[in-house]
Structures are given as structure tokens and as C-alpha cells.
Image (cartoon, rainbow, N blue to C red):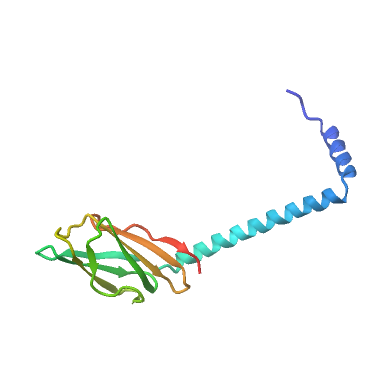
Length: 164
């Protein structure tokens, strides 16, 4: 293993600096500016994400109850965070379930809950083998998507879909 000679390294660096021309310096400076811009944009995105998490609505599964005949059910979510405006509801795992009440545009204030009525449209009775996925918007306009697996009593964390 060779030992690094500091004087030789310094003279080599000084020779390289002397031989570089203005084109190399401009190119190097441009690359440095681009790297600094990319780092600042990434830091801004992280800052926005942290702010979005801080003011994000927090919906939790309050109740899921199926009627005795198995044809109707209601799904109730509670908001323990900031105000949320419901945007969309999709049902995954079953394609024969109808939503009886309007969901889009409904505001759920902090501490309040919202009940969604469901009805089986086919011959199969309702059970808890499907997932309800809610999309909602916070006060800044950030869009979140949160799945609620009804076979589990704990809701998954919301996923930030779009920044405002």
C-alpha cells in the first residue's frame, strides 16, 4: 500500500487548476448550481410533506355493522384530526355493493363522524371480506387515500396522493 504524499497531491491539484480554462469552470459551476437547486427542491418537498402530515385529517373506523338479514350495512368513520372533505369512495373485493348516500363533498369536522349506508345488490349477503377505500381532501387541498379493511378493526394509515 502506497502512502499518499501530501506535497505531491497539492502540486498536482494546483497544476490541474492552472490548466483548466473558462469553459471547464463554467461547466463545473453550472453543475454545482444544478445540484444545489435539486437539493433545495428536495428539502422543500420534505417540508411540504411534514406540514401535510401535521394538518392531515385522521379518519378511524368507528363502526361497521351488518343488518340481521345481511342485505344492508353501515360503515361509520370518525375524524380525530383536522377537517376532511370526502372526495370519493371505492369498494374493493366486491362489485355488487351499492352506496345509498352521497359521499363526495361532505365535510367531516374534527371530532365528528360520518355514516355510509351500503346495500348488497346481488344474491350474496354482505360480510366483512371487502375493503372500503376513501379519498379525502384536507384544508390545504392535499388529497389522501385511506383503505379500511373491514375484516380488521384497525384502519391503515392514509397515503398522501397529491400535494396542493
